[in-house]
Image 1 (spheres, one colour):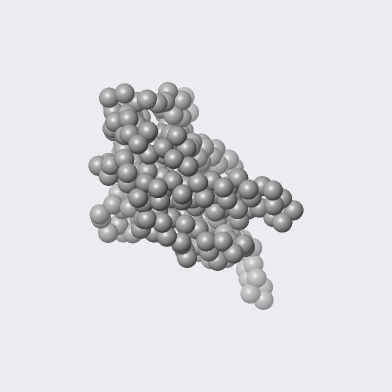
Image 2 (cartoon, one colour):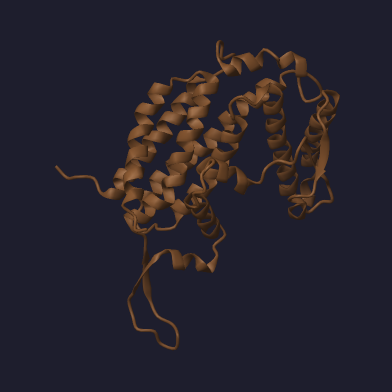
Length: 302
């Protein structure tokens, strides 16, 4: 009986994580009775306003959308690891999955209370609407009505409920139209900081952020990505040019994907706690993966 290749082992672990995330999302729905989420949902009516009659529920459902994105990219990572002649794509997918996972992890921080969770969640929506506006070209201006209205509704409701509202300067340079992007309370943390909190926590561990930065380089197709791959020279350079085969080792794939494996595990632990999901069931799937990556990282040269 043939044994699985190391890359297939990695792909199988990632596939199992993705399958279990999807299963939890399929089974979970309000009102989450007897859970922290259910307790927060009981305050929904207190915060009704221009942003809707169920703003707390809207924010409590936000992690499902974000985890759906994470889950899809986990499946993508497993798929490209099985694809021949593909050596870079897992980096791009890992970077994207880390972003959505980090936001989920932030929104589901335990002990912050319903009001702070509402603030964080609505800030995610505000930034999303701003990006939606940025995507719309001048030939489809009618499509701007809805995101502008939703932003205004959130701002008006927030003020009515005593939230401070400020206009952000962060990210405005990316938006073609001269609009201000509002946020509730203190300015939202940057994506980089959210990823740092997810992969490093209180530890000064640079590996997760390094992989995130590497993923950004692959995402944007920057020339120095070749320095991060294994190059096997196939011909002698002629006038400074030559042929080389690019590749990536199993150890490097373990390094590259470790942050999302640990990240989705930490995020799902928060989700299990908040929504009352079966944490033992999640641990049954996640712990073998966590051990696999821990052993792989331990074997990397220092």
